[in-house]
Amino acid sequence: MKEIITNHGFDNEGAIFMCSQRDHNNCKVGIYGVPYDGTTSFRSGARFGPSKIKEVSNGIESFCPQLNQDLSDIKFTDFGNLNIPFGAPEPVIKEVKQATNYLFSLGVKPLLLGGEHSITNGAIESLIKFFPELILLQLDAHADLREEWLGSKYSHACVMRRCLEKIPSENILQFAIRSGTKEEITEMKEMKRLINHMFGQPAKELYKKLKPHQGKPIYLTLDLDWFDPSVMPGTGTPEPGGFLWQDFAYVIDVLKEHNIVGADIVELSPQLDTSDISSILAAKATRSLIMLMNSC
Ligand SMILES: [Mn+2]
Image (cartoon, rainbow, N blue to C red; front, side, top):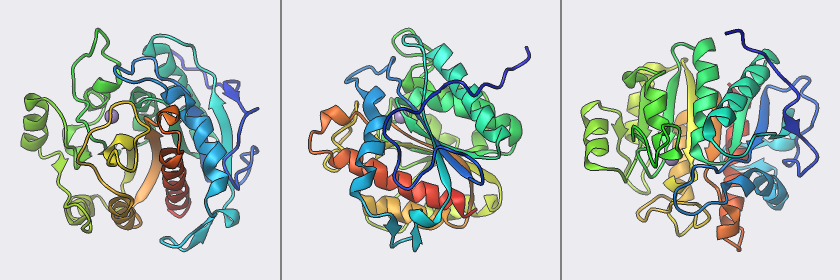
């Protein structure tokens, strides 16, 4: 089936990420929101994530001391939020795939703001065609390896299983996952996809695992429930025992040496944290990823 590349699918009337522009000319990185939470199984509200991240982004500095870069020196675009049909995930995933194809056709690296985790499927379906060697790095509390969940193969609980149908197991790295069924955890260990991380320590195992992949295209999917609920309460399925910003900074230290061609930040449900700390953390992670993706 011939695929149509569309550019009519963005609503750019709402909030805009700090220092970004609507016009994509001369931009290497482009943000777009996917306000979808149709399969969230516990606490919904991730549809409000993208707009909230943009809204609170003005509350943080444009300068990042860790990366020694200022967002105001970078030309990057905020396309707005993707117009998506409500209901089943399949048409949404298709829209995400088309939107990602569209960004690729413009020479812009996609950074998706979710929305729930199922949207990663669409980005991977697009990028794997352009980058057959794509490495997928998952930061998440949960394995997300279910064959199906509550009657859907495209639930957010199945996203990594669907990605495994497109990407060979050895090109998938599941970083510091701490929750799953016995089968999921066993599979990740046996297939050597599970990468351990010592809380508060440099990400040494990630460094070692990624080293042979130097120069290869990497897609990072950041499910915000990877962070500890104490710093990320605004997410649908919180899981105790998670990580702090410093741990993420160690991941960024490793990724600085690599070629990030696309990324997503998913599962922020801003209304579950009225302090907005969760949304600000998500905005800060967005700032780091824009800088990383712009400099490789
Ligand atoms: Mn997930």
